[in-house]
Image (tube, rainbow over all chains, first blue to last red):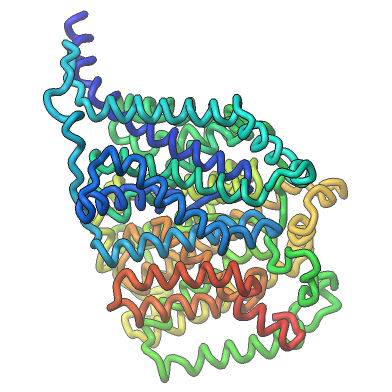
Length: 295
Length: 340
């Protein structure tokens, strides 16, 4: 009996780790979406495309400029973040007075453009991106399973970034401004805070988080133009399940759902692609505002 | 959050000069609820339906009409209830698959197959609508998109859809067991009639007392509630109607083109129907038809340029949202100061 259980664990552990890795990306992406939505009231449909851009910029930095992974981890979010500033200033900022749905439609259009341009330039098949030397080599042996170092790094790094973002928003003066502006922007502006600039930088930060997730994802998935759009719809479901009210909530939901997805792949593989959507439907029936949302 | 806002092209403050709200009761308007301008436009549309097959490739026209019906069904929700469903590919695609399966495997006649497609669309619409109307605004869009993605994954794995291959070489069969649809012109007249019936049905729904309540919900949901209307029930019925007509459009497309594939249920199809309606004009009667015409023509004639089609579609999205939110028909209507 015990032997069988150990065997089961041995078989399922890699799937669970993979689930945690996916969960790390869900958490990072839904965190970015929540931060952007809080300030801009825009659901950033281009989030998946910006995730993909993050991965591609890392690839370009390595292959065209010789900048390795660690440099890309810093530079790529900055570059994509600047791109986000341009988008926000030239287009998205024109829509704040309109219905929120126009923001969704605009960013959907932007996602199509970005994805199409990359498809034109790089084709649909993936480009390889090797993980850095420090994180390759022999996987950690836990006795019952072999744990690839890079996957551990992704989960730890994503978790650290999520916690750091939470600390910035909840514990710093800047975060206090952000939260205040989310509640009542005109009042904060009346106190002399440059709210429009804060909005722009918030968008850039959210986009930067997506790009960072993209760099982390580059060595795991092949770098290809469609990698973001496959992710983003699942992340929307994650956001609906968690509710966008709380930062920590989206982090917990992201990791939790990744884990559930991994477990489903062990128990009933056919359902692994749909389980998150089924959970979303159940959560909506039981608690329409989402697990951590405010109605 | 109470984001029961309306998606009207004139939502910007002080930009409501072109918006003639449907305040007139149906009886005060012309024949069958059409205003004079709409009546003229309808006659032009019918004339075009009759004349076009003599100038243009019928296969292309039939595809266009199926997508035009799809876009009209979608517009019923966004234009008249203010709900942005970002997952209408699910109903279109399921309609397409079910009709294809019924015609090919069960050997049903084309009209029954298409009807079954519509039933499938409506059934999915009933379940998904029931789940999604718990939230409004932007969440509604995300939920419908996510549910449609679930249908996509289901279709990817279910044996009857044949996965990546799709259902191929679907027989067109004999309409009512009598008329041979293998002749392109016969098929064209059938699809044209189906489109026209669907178009008039949607118009009738909008101009019924039921449709007037839908408009009231779009304009001010709390007020409609306070007047005693169960707004969720109205929204759900509108959703089911829209999904059912989308299913019929999908079924007709499968029988016409002879193939039902994963493209029909993919999220990009949901995006395309949004684009057609947005480009033609949200909440206009003829906008979705014009928009579908523009998008399908573009796909057909730009097909050799590959990814550029996606890029151009994205650019049109951006331009429509930033510069002309009323769409082609909406802008024309504003210039002519009529309702179209």
